[in-house]
Amino acid sequence: MRVLSTGEKIKNLRKGIGLKQEDIVSDEITRSLISMVENNKRNLTYKTAKVIAGELNKYYVNLGKEITPDLLLESEVEQAQRIIRERLDEMQQLLNNPVPGNEFQVEESFEKLMKFAEEWKLDEMVAVLHEAKGKYYYKTYQYNEALAEFFSSLEYYLQKIKYNKVAYLYNLIGSCYYQLDLFDQALVYYDRVYDITLIRDIEDKNKLRDISLKNKISCYRRLNRYDRVVEFVDIFKKNSQKEDRRLYEVLLIEATNFQDIGNYSKAQKIYDSLIKKGNLVPSGTMLLVYENYAELYQLQNQYEKSLECIQLAYQYIDEEKPNYTAYLFLNEARLYHKMGKVNEATSIIEKGLILSEKVNKVDVLFDLLMLKYQIYLDEAAYLEAELELKNAEKIIIENKINDRLRDVFLRYIELYCKNNQLEKCSLYIRKAKELGKPN
Image (cartoon, rainbow, N blue to C red):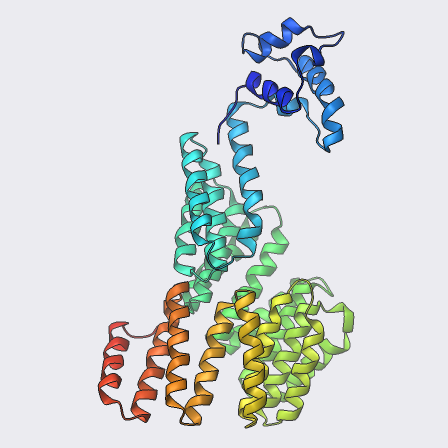
């Protein structure tokens, strides 16, 4: 990455399409003036930049590119900022769809961009890079690493008193804590977002308020604070626009809250009302409606109806969540296992494993392997069960999702106790203890 002077930039653009200086001469600029500008012996005025850009565009138009006067006149600092933003744009495919094996490439790219931004003392771009890297870590389930990046980005925006970005980062930080099952800490940051929307006049104020409210409701549900769920659902309903997308998401949480406390009739009533709204409800939310409805039927031991709901959920896989099929495979396999239909469960597990690996759904891949382990354990196929645990442990280590390591160790203990391998059982008891007490 190299920042060019104004003259170097014009020279590069000219030579890039095989032009000589005389090829961009016009009635308004001479070859001598162009030479002086390219050799940085003459400052470029807006008038001259407009003429040079016009001459260059006679050729660049055929390449589908436009040279603007502002591009020619941009300062070196502005150019450095543009280079970083362009590199980030080029990386978006890798960042949005992480692929195993590309981690080093991503890390190296961020390291180079960070060094470049720091050399040019571009503090805001450093903050942008920390945020982008944090989002990458979040997508690859490295939530502690994501937190470190988000906090580094937050420091800049707090100093600059940019409340919109502060609120946005608080939300990302809360989401990391949520994924780590640290719901009280997540609430702290969701509360901060909500407070900012109440007292500050910021961009996207209503959107951020609704997001923070929805996230708070999710936290209270996970903390089993059902009264608080009801309280904040009511607040959300009063503030939300009718037929708003997030309103349907909150109604879905309200239904699952009733489901959690055993009020199945109220939960079912909300599910039915959402289904009746049809196309007004986003497909992603409708998918979750049927998925939760399936769980409700399972709680009532109505497995056939539960299976029907899962089958209906498949039709709502859309462009927004094409990879959610893996989650449905997992839920369907679990249901077949509960129904004692081992062959059907195994068949769905194999489909799920192939898809999860293909789309890098590490969490689903892990859960499918654990379900496969359970099937082998039930059949006393101990060697096969042990192999699935080893596969699951490998995935955890490779993807640094150490919060699931305890689950594997406990299953090892279960397996070796059943198989009367007491020495191995003792080994994994020690390993589990070394991890410390669960949160």
